Length: 406
Image 1 (spheres, rainbow, N blue to C red):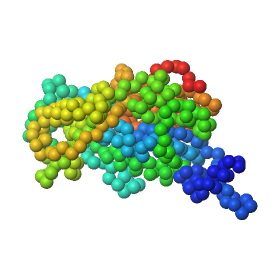
Image 2 (tube, one colour; image 1 turned 90 degrees about the vertical axis):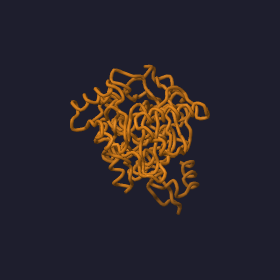
Image 3 (cartoon, rainbow, N blue to C red; image 1 turned 135 degrees about the horizontal axis):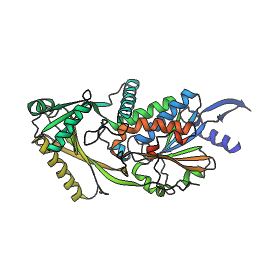
Image 4 (cartoon, rainbow, N blue to C red; image 1 turned 180 degrees about the vertical axis):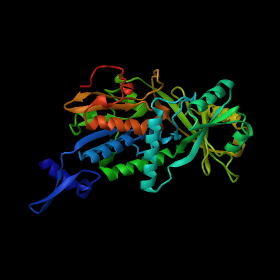
């Protein structure tokens, strides 16, 4: 108690803030003493879209159940400003590249859209950038896939060809056809994550520590937390004591940013076909995910990837880059899980218990973090609060090793 009092008095009112430590106050010997309540203390390592959405659902569920928690988020970067989430293009839709419905795609899409709209309404900010995404077909095989999607999901998609396609796009396209994903949207991912973190601060006791966690022992030995969740994406391979329990491939995602100049917006709807092009009010984003451990400092690789993206997109909408001025590029590694019969399903599981501290893993969102983040974070929050990993969908529980972390 002596050390705690010294620490609390040394930091003054900062530690008494509701966003740092929950407290009650009493007067002893004319000194204001902060007493820490018995909260469920949770550590989240990583403050990308997985970590912050998990934080949000933990705060929300704890408030609903009146079981207060105190959450500490560890990341050297501020929420939404680091890792793959920083450069996520924000394409939100429930379909695979072959225009089939992804695993649990509709429920994940519904909940993700709901949370995004909630952030918009609560903070009065525009998170959604565009409504509707056009998937283009360059081959007859792709065209038949789009036709099948119309048969399977007539209320969610619409097929366009010829002048009708050009009219919707606002540009002459060389594609055979285009499938408009009517309910799909693109979002400002960084702004969304920052907004979600603001709601976390309003809902519960949350603090961000700008620290790097390199080994599970860094947090286990402090005995500070009852639950520790690793949400570090592709960096999970470099967390000591964790990496051997999961199979994750690092794949490099890059965005190229363009300015459209003084002319009218040359594209009305985002397009996807292996690569993507997303129009904004003044800035366009073109990008893709590249296999392998590309390096941002490799100028030759950068030039080749710029050429690849532009040439492929120029085949879809010829001449569009003549109206765009290159500004800069950005990139980060994404965490791709091993493919299953259901596709690339994220990995979530409890890895073990150490001195009554539960260790959890949440990774492998890959390029579908925007789609799955809300639904999976909601499920994991329930598993943590109710101390029951069986709440998690069995499809995501795919540890590489059955050995427990001890």
